[in-house]
Length: 109
Image 1 (tube, rainbow, N blue to C red):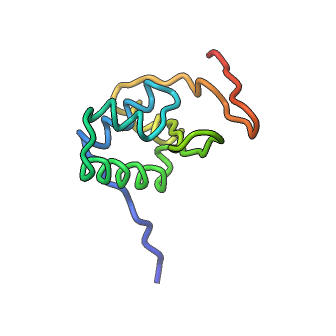
Image 2 (cartoon, rainbow, N blue to C red):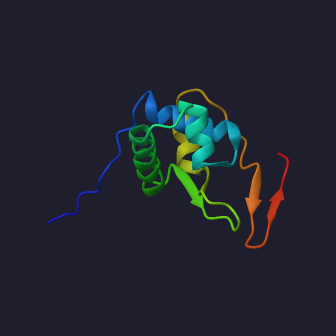
Image 3 (spheres, rainbow, N blue to C red):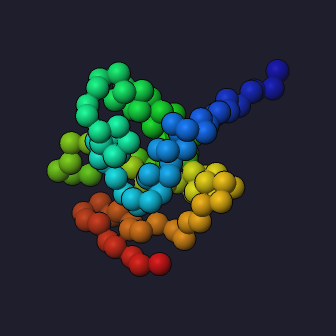
């Protein structure tokens, strides 16, 4: 029996808002993302956003990294996420920085 690959249905509002915000910011922590999108903290909104982010990381629309010294994960747009947004008219020129194991190296494009 052939294996069925699970697909992701991207919400035109909630998921796209997350992808666009991460694209615009380049690198952003999950807490910063929540604050930009929702403002005051509500546990149910936080849980919903984290669930959406986990789905998008799993489906390779977002990249998530752990950075030493930060409590929250750092998100950046993955090539598949950039491609999805480009299909909706948003341009993407590449990553703003590359994370190395010891520090962040910034590159202008």
